[in-house]
Length: 577
Image 1 (cartoon, rainbow, N blue to C red):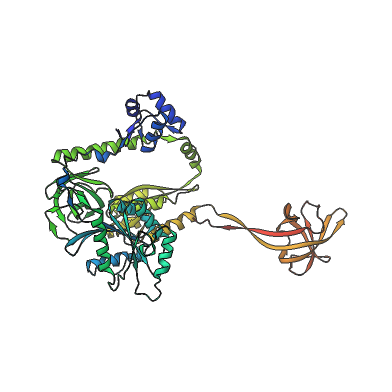
Image 2: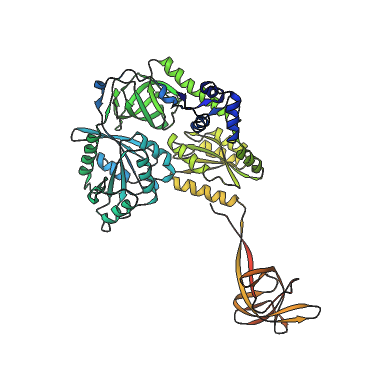
């Protein structure tokens, strides 16, 4: 059994190979490492194959003792349902209709900004729902949602059909090996076309059961409520077939869906329980965060004393904000919780330090080349951990060969005066705020120091602005625009002057002094300037289509009847990404 990430020398000891052998193989892979560097899962698997040994890789989070769990301890648990789909196809409206609330008056810019978790009761049975953001920039958050879910509802508007985000959502759900239900929304629209929607899904490999396939397609209207009872009944039916169970006696574990800082509460985490029962007063830890549960609040904001499997709640009591996607554990006591969190912090710190030596040869080449790169320094602040991670991921994808995006600082919570001071100390640094607004004091300091702060509530706008900014920093592209074309009808040799081509202008305008290509049988044989342009015996500045003219090239006389002159100008255009 090998931990998911271990040091080079530790792998050598466990595998029974010398340190030199291991490092030699890694060098052959293009990895410059020292004995203290960490190996990731891919490197471990490659080394195992190279040395012909079998290894079982264990995730760090799976080291927690589960305790002795008897089969009789398992009890039925509510299904956990993730709602996915294309932006504006009605995910949030559907969820709010199910909860029979008036919370959703519409998604900001068409995008739900944070993952929310809710419990819904149907026929005396509970269903847990996870609402994932709709924009493709949140693919990582959406993947996390699929990992903790049992059933995925893919919402597709019957009047709009399958879109790119729809395909992405379907792929995430399928890759997570969860049950999939297609909710065909907006059937109340006149142009709704259910058969077309089913056909588009069938082309992607998702065939409706009434067409001979395995997937449930439920027609609904989040606006009128039509079909929602059938949808909930279908969820409960599938859950019954799946025989979902969990042990309330096992050591409590939950997945952190979202982490943030709330005024008056401090660091909080939205969680969904995988097994065991969390109670107020339990020592807990998640990643580098630890503490004791001071309060649990359900999705309606009501205080509760305990949280059972598949239950969702807001946890108050951690000393820092846990990362979305991390595992929250209940510990036996406070000292164990603190020890586990500190162990994780030390592990991550050592791993970060080791990165400075783990550089591939390709990366070294890139570092040399980066001496010519322009840099765009950014400070990013967001209201939640999930939003922050998604923004960082989206922005860093815009890196290219000319522009390097350097996120010099990031965090959750309001934009502070220290953020402004840091930006002022970094030339051309921009502060990006998401889901928050700077205070008057911060605005005044930014104005005083000449620091620009841009705030957003929609991911589209943030990414588009950075794209535009990067495009402006990139070197302009030189593009050719053809301005004219002339065909050589005859040639004249003038003593001490050269060859003059008698031409007919067949397209555009031919101008004196402009660049031209001489083309023969489709092949460019010369590119240069038109040194002389005549209309009969008179010099001309330009000759238009349909008129004859005489053309001389600068320093080139090999011109024949049937050749074609093609004139052009070079135009600078901004690069787009």
